[in-house]
Image (cartoon, rainbow, N blue to C red; front, side, top):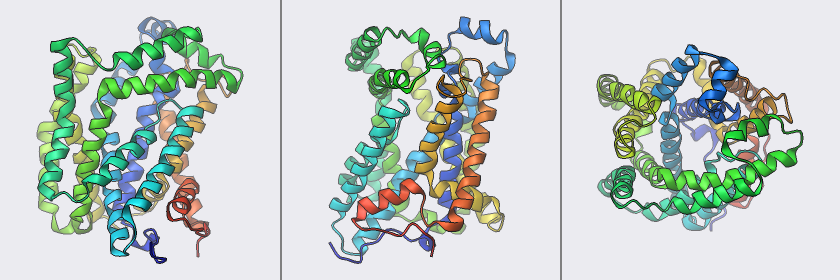
Length: 408
């Protein structure tokens, strides 16, 4: 590998991409904090006992399904794939061993994800990103047409899997599900008591015990939802965007972006209303219908969000909001982990123990405040430092070199 192999410099970064990544971090916080606050673990009767007839929470839940659920994870995943293409292109231009460097990068992400899953939050997505990133490497030589075809295939595949399950009556998810239930029984931790258990936890050891069963539950969730195929499909789409450098020509594709926004508002927003209704009704028709609805509504609206941000950035580049959003986006990995740390101390018994008694409305207000705090921290962090803390560790390991974390 040549000695001049270096990561993308801060001057080479695209603020619009970092701003989208910052926006995605906000949406992920909104999506994840109902679980941190233990609200998602409460049964209907438990919510009734604690909050009474809380109409506002039902409205918030509907709006969450409509505007948040799956959309920001879509953006985050697409940007990961896009980022991979930029990194690979940089490595190829400098004559580096692409496979070696990229696999080291994914291996480090896998370690960070494992530590996050095992010791902080069982809802981790980084391990899956790392594993799918390793697979993505083998698709990098595909033509544009084949990248799009494969992306479509992997995104629609979960619908076919759900149909197969419904017809055959068999699912591979049963194996991790039984393993998860065995752990719950072993630790005397039934699912209906999750909220009470974490609210009353007085030591990290108790939290860790919960995370042990939670890590197996996470595997079940991935298999049950075919999340790995969804992530790979979004990675491939993002890789296609990056390969064609579409992010670098926003001003030239404004008509196409405006068309995406029009279709998003006229077609995909109404479909997401139907998706939200189906979620509120507990997937009323069938899992196959719900999976199909997810495919035709959630992904397109997430892409619509990206088009809106691109158009706004192109028109109002001088506004300070892009600097703030992009600061959080530049250290998205650190912000993602920080959200978990803050969530534990706010809601679990080893911290302020707000969990299980915080309404969904208040939970989302807290999530917004956490994100604003991260934006402020990120903004002032980059006044003195060149990289986010975890991003710095990730880069040093990837390239086998010590980079100064201080800003020059």
